[in-house]
Amino acid sequence: MTYVITESCIRCRYTDCVEVCPVDCFHAGEKMLVINPEECIDCNLCINHCPVDAIYAEDDVPDDQKEFIDINAKMSQIWPVLSTKEDPPSDADYWSKIKSKRHILTEE
Ligand code: SF4
Ligand code: SF4
Image (cartoon, rainbow, N blue to C red; front, side, top):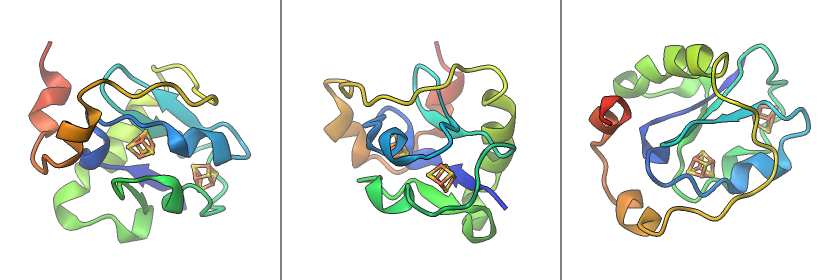
């Protein structure tokens, strides 16, 4: 099993999660992070470090977020590893309250 980052991460990108991962399986895109399912060891450490509850165990991903299982698998092969916390975007707090924002992923 793996863990999966879902819609809530988009434009929040607080990156608190990356520092606790023992196997550096977080990969960072410009708008969100994803987890490499081939590297995740199911340790559960990251879930409680995400302030917007974006991370789920694969079996617990809500039905309306299941497309993010594929997004994590695909984009973790493309985006670089991030293992050190970065400053969040200046508007991260605003976006943390927006529930429906997956369309942003495909916008320029
Ligand atoms: S802590 Fe949560 S919102 Fe921040 S980068 Fe990690 S998964 Fe995304
Ligand atoms: S469950 Fe553990 S190994 Fe998997 S992404 Fe989270 S911290 Fe990393």
